[in-house]
Amino acid sequence: MSVVISFFNNKGGVSKTTTCFNLGWMLAERGKRVLIVDADPQCNLTGMVLDLSNNNALDSFYANNPQRNLKDALEPAFASRPKPLEPVDCVPVPGREGLFLIPGHVGLAEYEVSLGIAQQLSESVQALKNLPGSFNYLFEITAEKYEADYILVDLSPGLGSINQNLVATADFFVVPASPDVFSVMAIDSLSRVIPRWIRWAESAAQLEALSTADYPFPEPKLKFLGTIIQRYRLKGGEPTEAFRTYFEELDSAIDNVLAPAFRKAGVLLADTTYEEAGLDAYLRLASIPDFNTLIANSQQARKPVFMLTQEDVGRRGFVWATQKKSIESFRQVFEQLAERVEVLAVQ
Image (cartoon, rainbow, N blue to C red; front, side):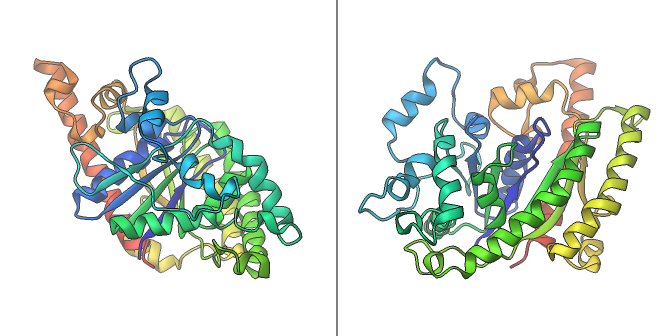
């Protein structure tokens, strides 16, 4: 049975997409079968797999590959068509056996309103009862088709109904964050939002209309894997002084605000489980410094940072030697992150 992990923060610009892609690749490299799902209408994860450099490349992909994206795969449910949902024909990620993409769609946000209404009124409006469980059902049947061990879901920032659904129905979730004042504020917000979403999911799962729907809404079992702190600069192998200050503020917010709220909501694993996984700090899965220019090379080559070659980077001599060392360090970071996920994300 596959494990669903959502990557979510209501603050943008925290490298959710990059982390999802790099971690998915590393898990597949370690012998797992992995689906990565682009549930962000910006489609950045899709762009890391498909060549979207030409004008209208995404439109051409949709036209030539009908139903081969998240929005169109869900269309029978959202359009109330007399046709069951079918597994997505995923896109194999070039260069990495065992890794598959469910492409995103810029129009996925069109489902926000319908899903939001369904999640509030599905008990009284029967035509809406299939919507809340449709995402989970689609992931299940697609994972079964591909014999997937993990489903990694890249979410947009924001607190809309799609994110609410995809976090609350996941098995686990990760909060990527950056050492800045806005991420500290987001931690405070998440400490209120996530428990509210869990209470909603628990109530929804008890509704007969949803439990007996064609796509049943699942019993929530969400657990928190941890935070991933990234996008900071190093000096002498350590975060610069300005970033260290925000590391301390983030740790304080996590320890004193987020953790108590999540513990009360029942989404924390046992403290001993986090300790056994060897997290960087309490509830911190990984600390990933800024990729700097390597992120542009990664996007252009459509491969993880830790797989970049000298040809991909286009550097020689001392510059390449420095960048090669950086690439090797990122490989170690993501190997360790994947190991920790394998320890923590167990059904």
